[in-house]
Length: 112
Image (cartoon, rainbow, N blue to C red; front, side, top):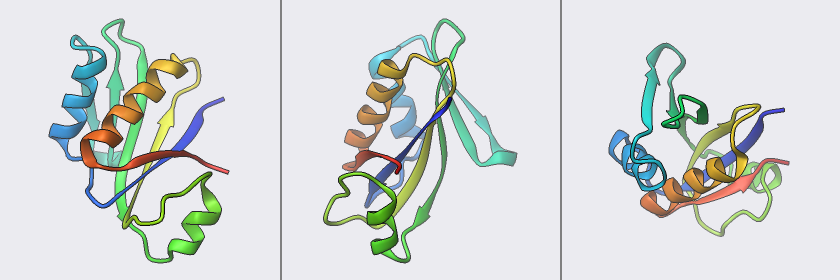
C-alpha cells in the first residue's frame, strides 16, 4: 500500500529544493515532472520510483489540518501531499521527504 504524508511549511518546495533534496540522498536520481497531474516524482538511480510530490496548497482551516495529521506543528501556512509509492524503499523515501522539508523549513507528518 502507498504511504501518504503531508509536508507542512511556510515555503513551497520549488523545483530547486526538490532537486537538491534528491541530490542529497541519491546524486544519480532524477526528478520527473507530470504537469498534467501537477506532480513531481523522485526516481532513484536504480530507476525505481521513490516519492511523489504534489502541488502545494494554502491552508484555509488550520484546525482541519491538525486533525488530519499526526503531531502537527504550531505554525504552518502550506500543505504539500507526499506519497511513497507501493514497493518503494520506505526508509529512503522518508529520508527524501525529511530532507525536502528541511530545505523549505517545514516538517513531514503521517496522515491519519
